[in-house]
Length: 136
Image (cartoon, rainbow, N blue to C red; front, side, top):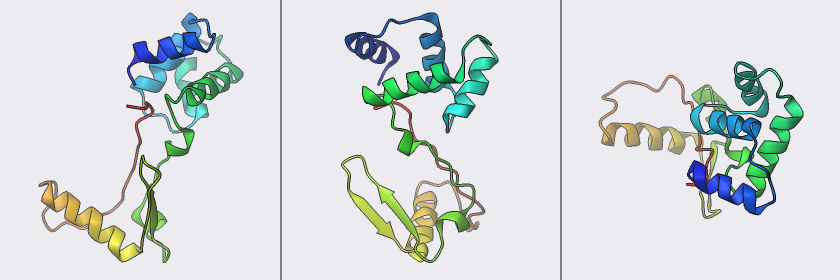
């Protein structure tokens, strides 16, 4: 979802588009933040008058209008974290759920990277997943 569309949806919900809200939105759209605390620290670098409650309210409003989904803001720092005996659960945008055993998960990632020309015969050391914070 583009910034202008998000701002329009916020206006439709009765939100005034303040400088603080625009700054928070810019940080969410431009930075790799996985939680409200990270957003807060990045906002503090630009405006020390914006408190954590303002961040949480803005994130809640963005989630309400469908611009972001906090359940998709996560990071997996190593393959072992995902590749335990139960494997991985992949949730798709249409709410389809794929449960992949660990060996299948490793094979999917490795084959996908090979097919796209990113790797040859290297092993996967770690996987870091980031999801778009916008609905687009």
